[in-house]
Every structure is written in C-alpha cells, then in structure tokens.
Length: 121
Image (cartoon, rainbow, N blue to C red; front, side, top):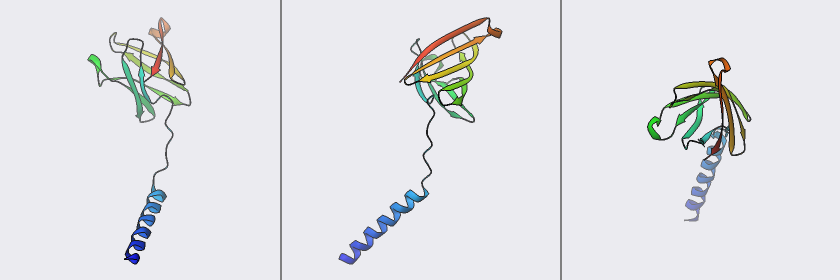
C-alpha cells in the first residue's frame, strides 16, 4: 500500500535526522596519534590517555608495555619515553611533520642525549 510505504520512508528520514542531530561532534585527532616505526623496527602506538598521549609497544618482547607519554598539540609535544631495552627514561620533545616524527631527549640531567626519527605506519 502506498500509504504504508510513505509512512515507512517518513520514519526512516526522521530516524536519520535524529541520529545526525544527536551524534557527538567529531574530534580531530592530534598528529602524534597512531602507529610509528622506530629505526630499530619496533612499532609504538600513541593513543590519548588523560591529558597526554601514551606510547604503547606493538610487538616483540615488550609488546603491550607503556613506553612513556607525551603531551602537547599541533605538531609539538613534550614528555618522556622509556627505552625498554636499556631501561632508560628520556625526557624530551617530539615534533611531527607529515609522516615523520623527530624525537630528542636526555637522561642524567643532559649527560646522555639521544635523537631519533620515526615513520608513521
């Protein structure tokens, strides 16, 4: 029956409009979010956690372990990362430029410093 069909279409349009009206606004992700490959081949995934972005190892003997956190926005971040193989915690900064991230950090008050470039996966 034409009446039933019109009624069904009207209900679908109303449901779609309500879904769009009450949908949560899309939150733009930060450039640091996602998976990054270190020069060692290790994959690190940055995901939001509290006011920062936690770095979780994605494979190998340290899989699932947190390897630090960074905070910031845009393309500049600061915080700390832990080299789990060496058990050293580096305080430093990171900057994201497209699909590369440059990190630099130091331990022991700046006595030992390290920098790396990671590639987005």
